[in-house]
Amino acid sequence: QDFMRAAVSFTQVLGESASTDVRAASRYNLALCQRQLGQPEDAKAALLAYRNDHPNDKRAADVAYQLGDLHEAAGENAEALEEFQRALASNPSPALGVELEYRAGHSLEQQGNTDGALKAYNRAVASTDRKNPFRLSALARCAVLYEAKKDYSRAYTAYRDIAQNSKDGELAAAAAGRAHQLEPRATKKR
Image (tube, rainbow, N blue to C red; front, side):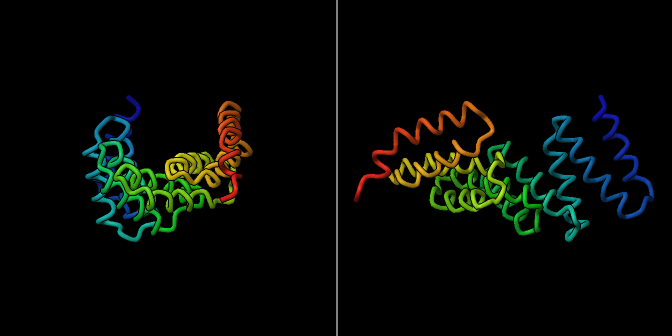
């Protein structure tokens, strides 16, 4: 109900002769309301119109992020990846950058590109915010992919990092347990 009223208000502002900044903010917020109302195609159209009208706007990373998220939800991994990469090129905040690298990695992994996924995940892992949930999620995906490649040393290191930095006690314990299981293979001389 609140999102519907907000969407109506933002639509009215777009129809009035408001300033460019107010119209831009209204179009962006209308797209967010449309997402909440379960109207993903309308949200995509509003975001694309926003980008077309304001190509170098301060919200460029957020617009691309929202479009990537919509594409990902629709199972459109190539399109999602393109938007996440566009958002990364738009100078996002450090926290959003970590999430975008994780999401790009996920899109690449869904397309079967595990090497590309590992590169993106590792860029997320490089974050200085050791407890960032997207950093830890990227680390978990790295660990799984390293295990699949039989790179037990890197998998072990990733699980240890999760165990040391996760705020979730169960996750930390599970990661520590998996690291313990891998330790003999990880430290085995080659």
